Image 1 (cartoon, rainbow, N blue to C red):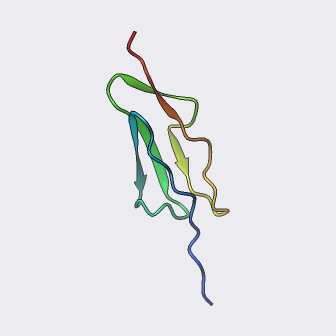
Image 2: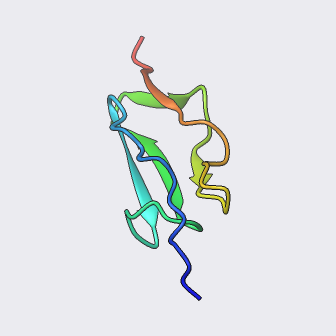
Length: 70
């Protein structure tokens, strides 16, 4: 029996930030992606971590990076 690989939609570049996925950047079922922001910015409006589910969707919502320099 042939099983197809379940993939989640590609995560697009985050302005002033980054993401890292484990076990790989393939964005397949079970992958966990963590978000972070560059110096002078902080995560807002989403989750700091998302997981690719069996339904091919990400848990939670992707955050944005906002300047925290006053």
